[in-house]
Image 1 (tube, rainbow, N blue to C red):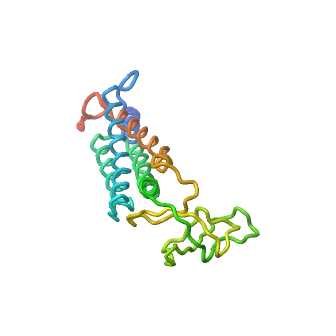
Image 2: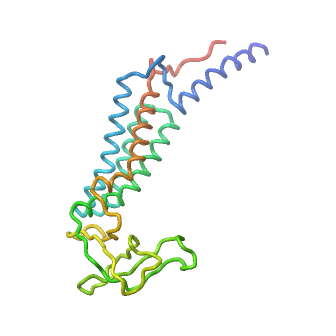
Image 3: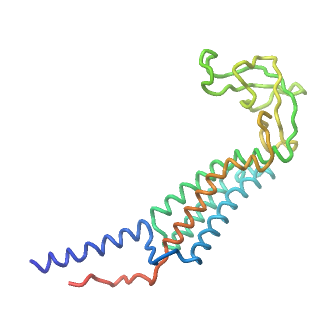
Length: 234
């Protein structure tokens, strides 16, 4: 009986170490993390981030619907997760990386559209035909959406919210920027900036993804391959 209790007590620390290694990665090193793994994690994060954003921008630029909508970015995110699984990184850290990569892929389409409009967009004045939004008695609540018609008298298929304010009325004119090749929907010209400004909103997601990749890869470090036949001593 005592021997059975001793075996169970000896096995508990081993099981906790295995569980911690599975969730957070083994990180079997002393002192600063290995430079090689740090560089590998940084490179993996940068390549994945560049692929997610790059495929979305390319899709918006060339009018490839699937890529412009972020589907290509989601594929890149999945490939990054598979790479970390192959590295046997901690499950929790793989989950963090997956969430950050997916969020980056979902935010990239708007930034990519802004990039295209900043590069080859043209600004023109349009006439407001109707305004939809919250009650004027609630200032600052919600967005106002303006239906507009262009100079040629043709209504635009999308409604504009940039530059559409509580005081905007049908018959007013607002400025919109449109893609000369028609591959990106027009948007209000208010607050327009450079192409880099359009992508700057992704900075936080990019930094978070690269940092999480570095931590996941570094903590995947093992001094030796795990011995599946290992058993705790009696």
